[in-house]
Length: 211
Image (tube, rainbow, N blue to C red; front, side, top):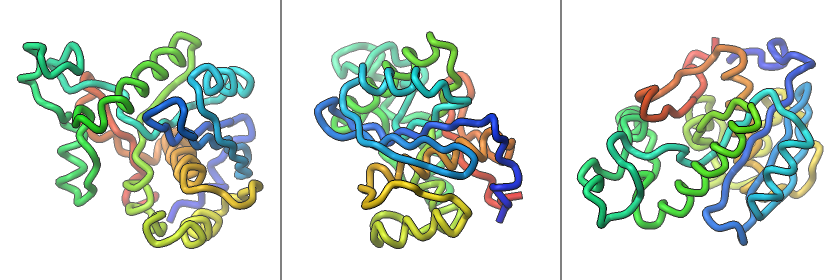
């Protein structure tokens, strides 16, 4: 396992976002700085963007699809572009690794995907680096318990890596946001794999070796 505390730079400020599909539902938002992380729950897009602008992070790691499949110009099933499918190479490659996600243009996923793309574009207009992450993949690769086995075990798995979580009674949204931020740390350290086609959109995961 990589000593993540050793590679954290004091100048780094990493935001992890476990994005909700609907603005009215809570989105987990984690701020990781010098191995200390605090979390909040936010809702509307304007609130999320305002928090990001106030912090000015080195990187933003979002748990949501941030791109459409190659060849798709929109998410409509009635458009000719629908023939290009509902998944990306990144999604299919993770599945081959034994990590099952949700295709970006499944009917239940469309709102999340479109919201993720909207926020990515908003952040990039402000000059921020944005990456797509998948906390379940990070947790599996690093051997961290997932939320399916309990929030307490997931929280302990994160703290065992050296992360000091300063917020109490975290929701599973916040814990996934912390995991997203942790993935951002691996990205900044160059200890990551970019899964998928760069032009289409990649999902960032830690290197399996952690070294």
